[in-house]
Image (cartoon, rainbow, N blue to C red):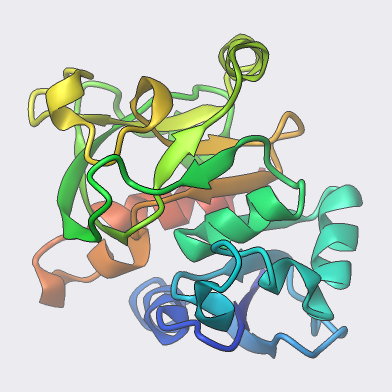
Length: 230
């Protein structure tokens, strides 16, 4: 199994992801440049966090047109696995691979801190093996993480078990106090209907090493890999 981590101009979490996948979890990882078309045989594509193209226009709006996105979209349409974190999540929404949009945080401030997440989907392998009664501690770092979707779209996410994670408190309760950015229904991550494209705002790669004192993110990344093994 091989992971391909894409770097766009302005990506700043690409090497964090490469290190987490390659060093901490011992997966085969290749680095892909935004002008590439060749995916180098990667089974799972990862769009990392950062500020692609300086977040001009909207976060992810320009990166969506990078040459490699033709290959990313083609990979997803063929059933290949794609995972976007933070800016990567924004890019996937801009590209139409995931529904909804990421708006400015309700506070209009950049937020960088640990949050707790409740795993929700029992269908998506990225979350199905995670205990729903054991919240995960994962860092966030974003200014536009407020997930929005219309009511019909939200119902579809619920009906198809596409909600991966919700922001919660330390006891696992989903409430307004635990929502850092105003996301509808405290949504922190979603999947597409086919369960092969995933996006989340929190950064699991920043919580995947004993050296960091937190390995909750490693469990999420392992679940992503389980898709290919299943």
